[in-house]
Length: 324
Image (cartoon, rainbow, N blue to C red):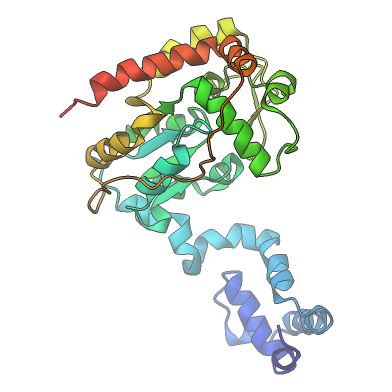
């Protein structure tokens, strides 16, 4: 905020702005209250020293009053979700993508959300953000996607969502993860695929772990606030037992190489607006490289349940893809 604009800001105008922001719909008497004006003079002094209007507004947002009043302030009606919830067509089933990392999920999410207004979908964002949303807003979404397991499915169960996921050949998935993490500087560029596979905890059968994990269940699987599964300790036996009922909960399961066909099927089944794309632009991809025999053997050993998941995806898709 410029020094000139701060200089022209009166305590009375700032008081009006603050009280309106807090949702009070203030009277002239309230605006002229000396305590409010004194607070505004102090805030103007802060602006003169810092020049940061963002920090000032952040202090208003952090107040207990804002937390209480914001749901009553019509200025925030679009993000409350009440209007959207009231307009929901009960026959329109929302789409929920159990997004397993590096299975072409980002590509699919972008294509599906492109058919909806910005407030109609929630994808590529953290679990903490999803759970912090007003309930009406969450219930009004037409499309939700994330690394959340079945959490969103349980939350929107009453809306009978269309639930789907994709699986990828482990011999392609793990090298893709490794290349992606190196590109994003999550791991050192000098770390070989073989070293990464053998030294990184939680990689074993990571696709099935991402599918079967559910925040409503207690167990050894944990989430960080951004939705990534960490410190997983599930045994292969646990995953083998949990995989069949998890697949049964999916309306559609496809191999990642069939992302275009899955997108078009979901577009039709959910009745999304607009014409479907001829092909889905690939996002978040990395250039393939040849992997060593040693790395391939390591991947196959650590992916026995993932291999079964991918096999089931191919079988399911052979049937699902021919549905009318």
